[in-house]
Image (tube, rainbow, N blue to C red; front, side, top):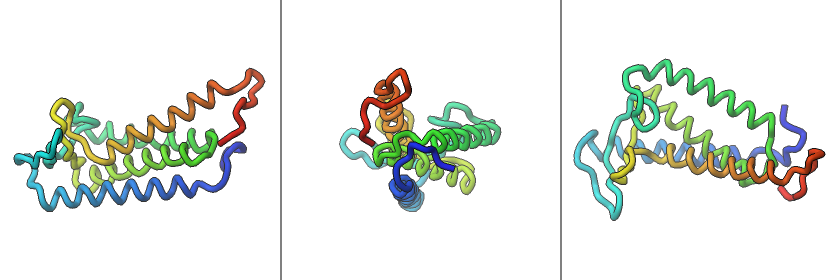
Length: 167
């Protein structure tokens, strides 16, 4: 059941999710084919492309106990989707795109974890842990959805009506 304030069908969300998932999986497949794991990468300007397998959590922080954390993160992901879907937000394309980036990126990393036992990371900027397109999509998507949530929260009148009627 969707929220009353939602506008239109979630087509933008579906397209953003599928496009993100497809680009993520394609990029990881190319990296697996053309870049041996843990070898010296290809430098391009300020970054290096090299294959790293991450069996831990985000940025390889927790190693060795990834399945309990994976299952917990799946539960949190499902709860987040349910809350965001029920809340509905403004339902605009910007919000749906952000949510689609989160969903597509999360599913891309989940596929890696299930199929390979580890997430394929390949973007190395030197000062940050190696990451992938799914991670990038998730970060951008969280920023987009948070911007909408903050904006909508700040634009609410005390009686619950929105000051800005645009979506």
